[in-house]
Amino acid sequence: MNVTRRTLVLGAAALPLVSTIRYAGAQSAEFNYKYANNLPISHPMNVRAQEAMDKIREETDGRVAIQIFPNNQLGADTDMLSQVRSGGVEFFTLSPLILSTLVANASISGIGFAFPSYDEVWPAMDGELGAYVRGEIEKSNLVVLDKIWDNGFRQITSSAGPIATADDLKGFKIRVPVSPLWTSMFTAFESAPASINFAEVYSALQTGIVDGQENPLAIISTAKLFEVQKYLSVTNHMWDGFWFLANKRAWEAMPEDVREIVARNINEAAVKEREDVAALNATLRGELESNGMTINDAEAASFREKLTEAGFYAEWKGKYGEEAWAILEKAVGADLG
Ligand code: X2X
Image (tube, rainbow, N blue to C red; front, side):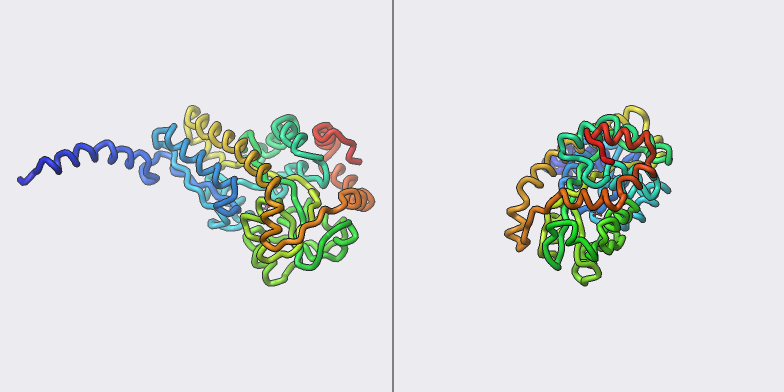
């Protein structure tokens, strides 16, 4: 046998590497899970989630390998919601409003103009309001992690012209996510809302199926909606987030100590992502302007009045019930009507 000194040294050095690869490799992980979502890979949600998944793999010595499928690779939101319920994917992040197609009262945090600022959002979502919603979600046999991730305050974009007051929304063909609350809100504005999953938004705008859409700045930027929209109207008409959901069977298959590692790292990543999104939302206006968007600040009061006149708040208070509505009003520090 022709074993040289060189191959011997290499052989010995390669040993620890081989075992690292074996532990870290997705193939050999004991829990080989998928996390699916609707956002571009450059959005802070995917950046921070990837950091969390790397830490989880390290801290569990390779037992848990969670692969991220961003950007609707595994389907649109409504498909992914079915998949996380059936176990086709193990993890999924979803807006509380879209989740309300399954858990009716989950959308309560998205009521128009409820939150004046982030100062009210996080104490509410990490406090009583969030706990109430998570309780509702758990009744539907899904697992939900403690910390909600930020999507942001939503703004309206258009190819037709700026939106300055509620009047400008009359007859406006606007894409809204698939959720009764969104449709109800833009119906109250007398717009023509079309329910379209985010997976189809860019092409719907590009082909003119709708004239506008609404999303936070971080999404308008990372999904490059400025390429197909000219006007950005800062309305802050609602706050939106993403609940981190897990399939119950897949979650319970992991031992308690492993679940603790997974939950802790994902919740820590959520808190970092909130800071990233807040920073982006504070700086992106300039960038979007240099990408050709014309930006205006809308008159929030006119939108609020329109919603009140249309009976929007009264209708949703009735749907959610007195108890849930009282939790919301306490959280936002206001009488919403
Ligand atoms: O669908 C949208 O607009 C998005 C990406 O903001 C949500 O997930 C609600």
